[in-house]
Length: 159
Image 1 (tube, helix red, strand yellow):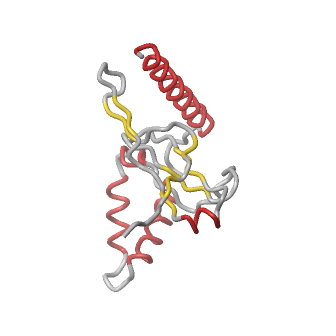
Image 2 (spheres, one colour):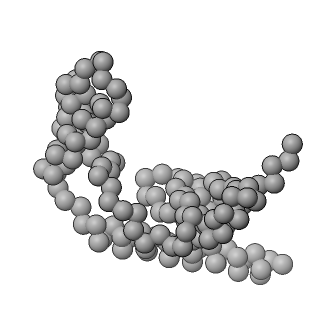
């Protein structure tokens, strides 16, 4: 059976996986993509995939955008931060909160209790300068673009 799926255009850095950053054998590949049927693409003609920056993984998350450009993802009530795991009392906080829920509760309810506790706990933790994080992400994107453009010119020179 033929599915007739088409690749949705990716905006930003074209690669979603990397290995060996800072080494002579640095490699980047496009492993992740979004596909759409002809009827879906006709329904969402402005759809695109945004390649986002991830600093804690060798994969870049992709975000499917169905209309125009994403400027605000809205208010997110809970967002886990990897840096919390480095805090001394994080594990005990999670363990204690998980233990307060009963085995008859749904997983959704248990996660709601845990997220509420983590939000309260996180307010006591050192603050992160969000502006600096955004500036660093912008710098990473610029460096990625420069590296990509440089590799294209090297390929052209080899021809």
